Image (cartoon, rainbow, N blue to C red):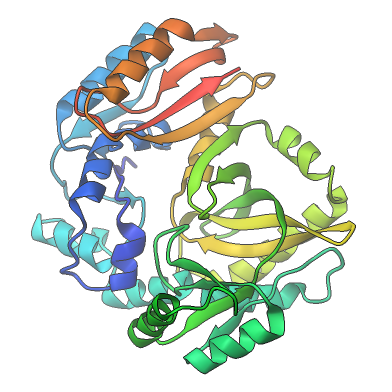
Length: 387
């Protein structure tokens, strides 16, 4: 059955806000529009629809891809149809918008389903998952819930430099580093606000991170491993890009630090505990962010830094590699933000000229490809660069 795919990057904040009347910022609306064609690359059902703000985005992307021998089997639309949806993520504001557009209730989540989704998406769940790994050799990861400033200060005294997390926030956001040395009125004010609005704050020790990666999963009637995601973040923990590599190559890189058996044990235990936790309350892709950390002269795995209970860039990069990239090639999947009009188009033209796309056995083996349309006013873009 065909579905209507929708990229709504305000999902995390809308879920945190948890009101039908949540209004996103103009900058996130711009991002949603600029990247609205992205679902065309991971749409699973033939003949599915992709919602965009203007049809020219889809038309331009199709022409560009057709010239390079890549066919996108989707239809484009600028309005909501009454049909099954595959949203980036579900939240009350999205349901309210779809309902207002005349989408039938049978295609929407109920209030109870939304409440359960918010519960499952909270960072508190990581603490519950980590409890299942406490006896596993090579594993690290500690997470505590703090309900007052005094709780937070006690945690810092016990653990030193600490990462504080809002239970619900955008991925890579809602985070703060705190220690007794950098404690300030602004840090204390931020902590107080999170506790006041969300009831608690999550405190975790600061780990000496060596590698960021994730295990991606798909759950329906059962849970399955969808592959690895190897990604990079900036100094603030915000997502930058994914490395486009085969699952085997990612695992080879990870086993430079840990035995393969440890990765297999973590994968199996996560599938068991998450399937028990999610039950029939969630269907679709989700990712579990992890870290390899160095402690003294040994390496440890943090098996549950964050659970992204929605579609995510790691899943897309995995699908892009598996569907479109030659297995012997490697490259980068990049989400770019430009600070002025014209910059994206200038870079796009330069990259096409310098790194023309080359195909081998029907797959990309080298070159540059924009996964989203690029116009003079584009500020956000997703592209791949294959070596």
